[in-house]
Length: 252
Image 1 (spheres, rainbow, N blue to C red):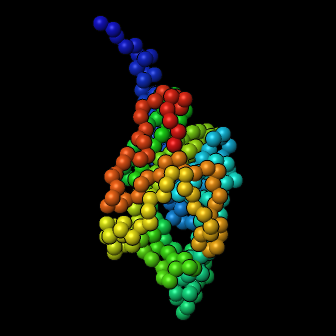
Image 2: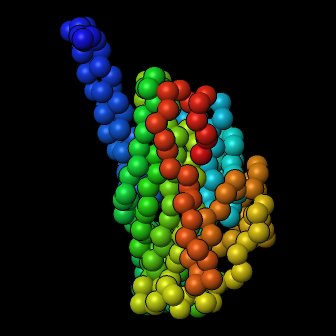
Image 3: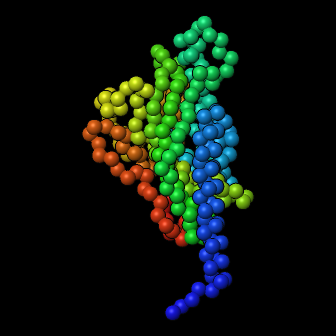
């Protein structure tokens, strides 16, 4: 009968501790990014990315994939600020008797993260995680007749890596599952949605505020087929599985 030495027991406990420490750190990081987004702290959210690490990337729905610090900044910061300016213009038109002194006045995008599925590599060098996220939205755009209150359900997936001793997001995917106005059935809302985008589709033309949609470095790798009565739910994104080193697993 084999016995486990005290040294082996200590090593096992230390490894479990490092893994649990990593789980807590990445959960706090992804939550911090959600709080930053709600507050319009886009630069701070951008700094949560592993900007010094080769291969850093983010995908945002049909916007596409962004694979350099510069293009990531454009979609995470500059595009979001353009949305705010368009919102402010729309609000001033809708409520001419109210003084709007800030582009974010009356702007709401708050995210509730849930169902975390997190795996830490055996070497504790990287972490993989998936989340579902319900977003409550209240905003307007210059080109729309009225501001709206909406629900948006997202799927998040990310790889994390340490940079300068701190956990950062290495790769991230955000894909919308469904959206509807706050008082509208998402079943009925799905009947009015445009056809599913074919693989390789990216946004073209200009978005809110007249700003060109960010030109991606590539199409999104895998879009979630947004909810419709004609679609079958799929396991997208792929869930993380136990792994030893990042070389043995897939990339989000």
